[in-house]
Image (tube, rainbow over all chains, first blue to last red; front, side, top):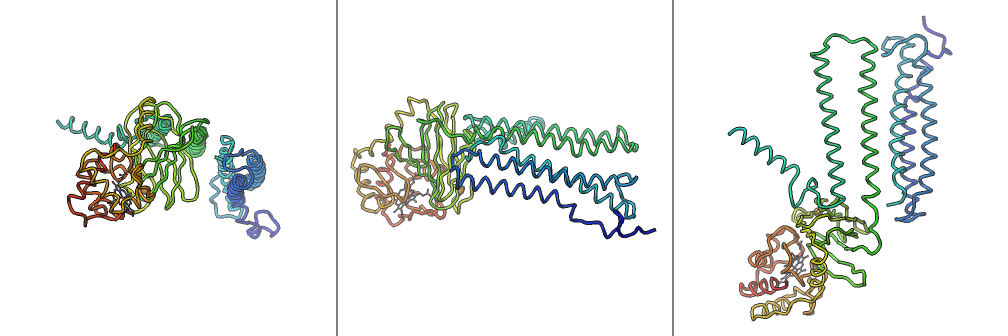
Length: 130
Length: 328
Ligand SMILES: [Cu+2]
């Protein structure tokens, strides 16, 4: 009953790494935004200066991060909808493990997207370094 | 009887949570405090609604429809109630909170009153920067004109302190090596209390002050009085007190303008007698307490950076206290 090793649901082809791609993008987005704003205010604009450059950079990070998360989430969705399985994907089969990992990836991607948006919200309201 | 007991208990609890009068964020006397109070009430309202919905759901699940739900319905509950609603509620609260911030940390308009306050272990050095140049130095008490923005420039020479007058506005840390800023708009007159809101050592809890919001004309008069040098002693006792003050080295640490005492280690005492409190907002400013402060400083305030003068004879202590109290 076991599938050939090149089949998409074969155990040797599953990876936990894809699960943490979105949260990692979220962390990187947060860190980069934070560091950019800190350096901008300290070295470029000054303590009361405008946040313009940092806002543009953070807007770009946000778009890039959301695209990355969307791709990762889309991959999750595809694995989640593989074949004809229904959530919660808890059968003891390689197919259901495949779907389960996909579904978890999708959920984490959604969470990460919201977190990235929440972090980016800050620069919508703030336009200077104070 | 039980009811009235419960009632008074309830009121006491409310008063404890909200505080009232002199030191309460929920009884605002400043524009910033009003916004913080509004935020608090929105948050409280929001959490009450969430709590009630949860109780209602539990009731629904246990009593109203205890039987199993269809898969579809269950999914609706999980995705809607577990993910969608919290995201929308949190997003709303976050947006509302963030939208308030820029105004709260905005600079005061040019020409506003500026007060430089330094938090030191465990007291407040206060300098009114006059628009026409020069400054008026005082300590451990802050007076403000009503209805005007005031900008506080805050810093610290030792450890982190935090400057907070809950009734008037939010708090701001005072950080060594860095100047922070806080703008407040007092909206009504009254006497309020400020505190240090960041643990800063042994006497942190004894690091407070009174903030008096006054009518503009009264404030101007007060500031003019504070600018004057110390009052000349008029009777033999206070004259003696002044001599003891100079002879015992108090002037190495304290400034009393006009008598040649220009120490900068401790609070300016030029108008000590006019202050509402002693020792940074926690002792009454009367003769007895003043005498005890000078003689037993370290017992009154643990760790205090002023030596005690217990070795002085009682009549000298008495004269010292009388002199300082006469400095209105
Ligand atoms: Cu403190």
